[in-house]
Length: 461
Ligand code: SAH
Ligand code: SF4
Ligand code: F3S
Image 1 (cartoon, rainbow, N blue to C red):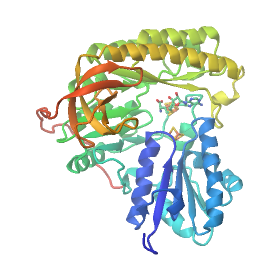
Image 2 (cartoon, helix red, strand yellow):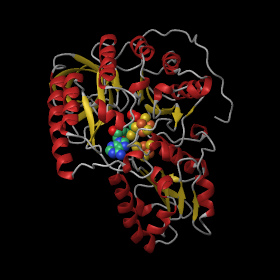
Image 3 (spheres, rainbow, N blue to C red):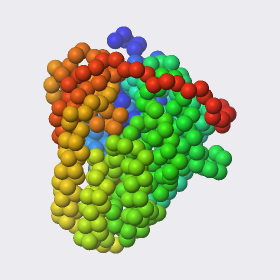
Image 4 (cartoon, protein in one colour):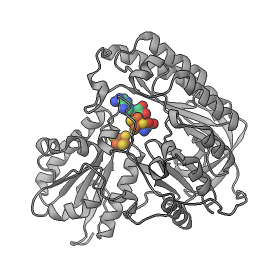
């Protein structure tokens, strides 16, 4: 590192949207001449891209900032930046709780990072906007993976799930022009990306604000035509907007993976109503049946909240019985955490910590059994995986991921990250599979020609 070399260290909390925003923060800094540092100790700028979905996400940030104080005392020229959802939510509170922070920016003004950083050379620069000024995809990005890319198709959310702070901190839904999305994917493929994940809080309502109708399934079909992209994933569809046309596109598009993350939240109609999820247990299960019929061997995963205000034992039993019926490959389970700016924060009948914990454990143990059964069923079959790297626990092994998003560990044959392998599954565990390599090459599926119309893209979005 030379005297003049400016370096940055970036820590990301939260979901894939934040991961991707971090790629843009890194991209903007690198465009300004910064290079990545190995840790906060040797960085000229330390950035925290924050999350506030549950209370423990808040605590984690303030804990991290506490550690930064000692570093700042030692090196006053160090710049500390806080961006993202928690910054959007807490605004001035960050300055009050951590006065040594130099820059605070929210979710709507990512593009201002270089300007605010420059301004902070004279005094702390705090700026939180209430509306997005530039669709973030227009910003430079430094991709963290050579073979996988996040692709933002919409930002914000127009739903009003009563537990969720996302609409308050990310604003209303704005869809990105499909022509611009396709252009980006063509560029990514040319750059060696083989797998993309489309990102939006509610991908199935994509396009509603562009031409009045949701057009997610059309978008999948357009992107499926792009040469070089072998796998398309997306997250997350809202069950109320998940329709047959999307299932058909998933079944028919060769690159769209056989995995769907369909957040349930609760299996009880009365609880779903209090959550304002706008579907019933029956409707949700009907969608699961429709998906399983159209896409053989599809993997379905979900999110479930335990201990929502007023959740009775009967309501919780409904969640357990739905989990039994739906047979998820995996479930992300969360204990309800009251959030400011959400309707549920004011609901009566909070559930005690002990009851929540006990239900949470019952739910996890049921799901573990089902996950194990789903994974054991795969033993003996072969799967195509993309190698993600050396296994964390055993350097002689590689980890890869199947199209159904399952992690497979197998003896290393030296395959580099991003390469394809065919593996025979030799063992099934609740959270991963074991396998052995049986093939190293793959036949790319035949290509079709691009024939679907695109919405053209004005530079502003
Ligand atoms: N837009 C996505 C969800 C994003 S938040 C969707 O609708 O699918 C990711 C998950 O966090 C949610 O699915 C929910 O299960 C969980 N979550 C959100 N708010 C929460 C809260 N207040 N307490 C506990 N879990 C919460
Ligand atoms: Fe939150 Fe609901 Fe929007 Fe998902 S759909 S981001 S849970 S408000
Ligand atoms: Fe994501 Fe957390 Fe924000 S889940 S949208 S980073 S509140």
